[in-house]
Amino acid sequence: MVNGKLFRERNLLVSTINFFALFASLRENLYKIYQMRFFTFCLLPFAFCLSACRPAAAPVSVSNEPISINNVPMPSSKPIGEMIWTGFDGKEQKLKDLQGKVVVLDFWATYCPPCLEEIPHLNELQTKYGAENLQIVGLNVGGEEDQPKIPAFVEKLKINYTLATPEDALMQFVFGNRDEIPQTAVFDRNGNLVQKFVGYDLKIKYDLDKAIEQALSQ
Image (tube, rainbow, N blue to C red; front, side, top):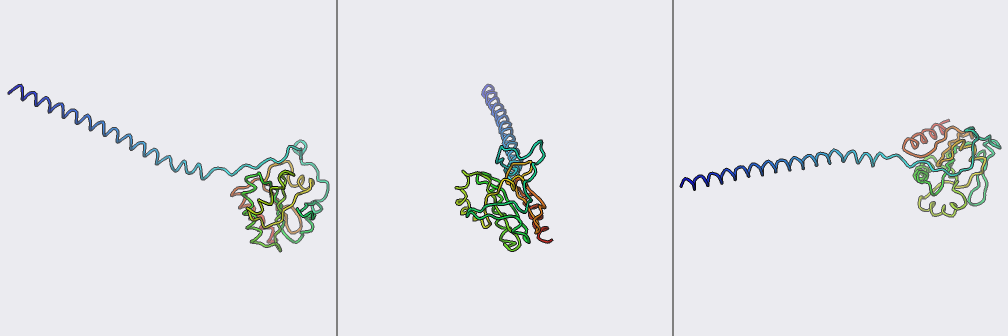
């Protein structure tokens, strides 16, 4: 009887020890799961910020040809008002032809992501202010191989402003010592360059709107 009683007590003790060991193991596993979930919860806002706050696409270089010497822009060959762009219908136009309007010259190409990001906003600006006050001209600088692609982009992006190609003197004047695109130049009603932007992001969008509003108010 004594041996049987001791045996039962020993089994009870072993069972109790096993129970507490299992409980401790379970508690440790639950704590690890809690830590992992807490870490994941903290990581999610950071990951969202990385994706939502990523920088805009960088401007794209369009040429290796020099447009400056020792970082000094090459002198223009003619007055800015005489500089020409040629529409895809073959018609030439000068900046001075548009005096009395605010003019935005946007240098772009179909292979340039930030150029394509800017186009919908340029559509909005042309619609907002009307052709009697604002004339936007999209000047394609992608080269001969890019021009056949333009009609598809016009259809896809519903471009509602004039498209053309610039003469070299106009590119040289606006680009200065930078050759990235998009480059967007704002001219006042008298044909004076008031501001130029390189690239496109939310800040440039805001500053472009402000520059146009100020030019229109003068």
